[in-house]
Structures are given as C-alpha cells and as structure tokens.
Image 1: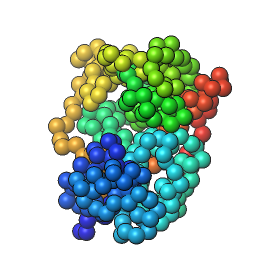
Image 2: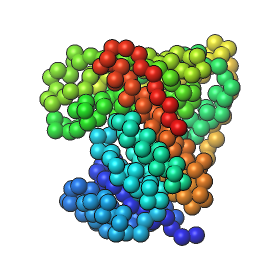
Image 3: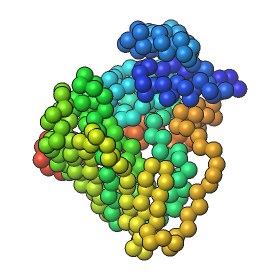
Length: 328
C-alpha cells in the first residue's frame, strides 16, 4: 500500500509533536510544510524533510498531497481548511478547531460533500483508560459532572495565548480537552452559562483573558455539570480532574490517563495494557482504510466541543445562558 503523502500548515511548537510522530510512521510521508515564518518552516524542513512554503494555497496547488495537517492557534484557522477539503484532501485540525461557528460549519459541509476523512487532535480519546471508561459508562446513569483545570499563563508577554480575542482563554484553548472528554463520556451538552473574573492576573503584562471561569452545563440526558478554570497559578499548584456522579451512588474520578472509583472496591474495571495509537496515526490508518470510524474525533465532533466554550464565552458577555447550536 502506498504511503499517505502529508502536508502540514503551521510548524510551531505544537506542530513538532505531530511531525515527530508522522516521521516515524511507515505508512506516511511528509511531502511539504508551510508556515508564515520562513525561518520556522526552513528549520522544520531541515528536521522532517519536505518542501518549504509560506503560502498554504500555493502548497496544495503545487504538491501532490493526500492529506493536510493544520497545527494553528485558534485565531489562525481560515478558509484554507475548507478549500483543502473541497479539493478532496483529508484534513486533520489541531484543537480547538475554530473560534467562529460559521467557519466551522463551512468546513463540516466541505468534508461531507467531498467525503474526505477528517480528524481533530483530542488525544485523550485514544488513551486506554478513557476508552475503557467509555465502554463502562454505556447505559449508566450520570447525574452530575464536576470538572476543574487550574494552571498558569502560557508564554511571555507577547504570546497570543494571553489575548482573549486570539485564544478564547483557558476554557477554550486548554480546557477544551476536558470539554471533549466530558462529551465523549457523558453525552452532549445543550446549554451553558458562564461567569468569569480577573482579580489575580492584573499584574500580568498584556493579559486580557479571565483568570477565573465558572461554567454550568446542562446535558441532553438531563444531567447537570460544572467546569472551573483558572490561569492564576503562575507559581505552581495546577491540577485537573473530572468527577462523574453515577448511579448506585458512586463517583468516578478521572485524572490524566488514570481514574479512581469511590467507594473503593464496589466496581472492578480492568484497563488493557495494549499499545496506544496516537490520534495522528489513527488518522493516517483511516485514510488508508477509507474508514472514518477509525478516527475517534471527526472535524464535526471537534466543532461540537469547540462550540461549548465558544457559547460559554458568549454567555459571559451577554450575561445569560446560551443554547449550543446543533452540528450536522
């Protein structure tokens, strides 16, 4: 079987995790790389190979590609993703996939019309523990979900992450992993209401994102939930956990790749010790098999996760609960 010919738009820090994995796959070949920074893309080409471009549309027009990875900050997603899908190229987009509903829907429509494989970088869905819990929670009643992601500010004073209009804040850019896992395990979220504040990070230069966020969740199945985030822990002490209150009066406590059931011993869940496939590798395998189901998060599914935080941020601006739009 021929190797999947891959291009990548964006060659910054996050792209390195994609490219370093792709470079080890026997069924993939890095053909072209693109970045607005000539210095950055030249460095990436020196490490991973391929042809360097600073214009994504030129890259897809001049090279023979099967798929394109988009490793971009939230604000940098653009029409090129739709154009790539319309050209029949498979697309993998780093999370969160957008900051704008209309853009996201246009990409979904393009992937469906062209029939291409799509994927999003929600790696947690491929972990053995989370996959096991997905099966365990099938047909279980979930009454409440309580999640927190606490940490500090990413990057220095000039970093885009500190700018709300570019990152969407901690909830959209970081806690998107927790949002996606909550949806994966507990079902669709239909309504959100968020309040936020900035009381601690007022000493941080060029920072416009809230340093505390509290979001309430309403689920399609009747459950309720909450997510709290903070970026105020610049001196350490960060943590993350999601608790699921379940039938039979037990709680499932999910950390990063591990979990606990309370009370201990009431349920035995065995996690298989099998090799884990990365989201990037699953995407390549899906292309070769022409089977979207191999990918655990399609672009449409990634958009559903992004909309939770997009709507939550809008809720904080408008001061009211927001219904989450349906994604076809």
